[in-house]
Image 1 (cartoon, rainbow, N blue to C red):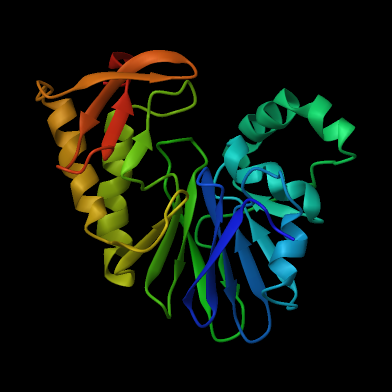
Image 2 (cartoon, rainbow, N blue to C red; image 1 turned 180 degrees about the vertical axis):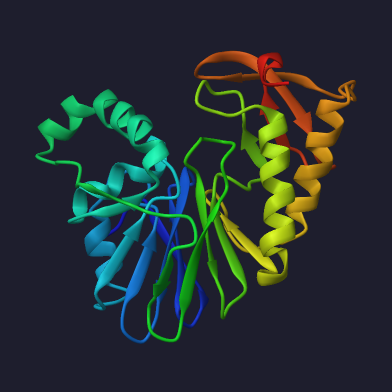
Length: 252
């Protein structure tokens, strides 16, 4: 049935759905309910794909309002999103409204999600935490029993901070410091919005070190970075190619 989605079972109750290498969403199953975290690009019937994994009542949560994490919302009745990202989501849906119309799809309504909100799936609880930086309304979810942070693009080792909707690097740094202080004891592993597997929680410290170098002018290793919006800069945060904070000087 599926041509794009590559499904990996990470735990007995947790599945990673890689949408053609472009974005990643997750299905986590409790005893009573399941949650879908992000909905990828919407090029396939994600509801049908999820139903091959679970028939439990389903909660859909978007970590932020970018197109590659919300377009699959059309296959569901509703989705949770932080209110700060509603205008961004509306903008991204409008960009492809013609395509949606041609395919007979309609974006589902949003419900507001709140920082500190807890979802009880039955034996698995997920707490909403703030990850603002990549966008103003970026959130993460901590699966308490599994000690996993689902971070969307908010905590990511290829982190776009150059976008108009991205906050300054100083705001990213402050968010990471608060995440570590308030929630660092709650998670050991991270699953990002573009992951193929778990990352260690130490990526928070790696990003913090990158922010510190950027803010103190240690940018001699930075290189140009081209994307759909033009050219900006990339700051390496490790020795692994592609592990960077992408930025422009207006964010410093």
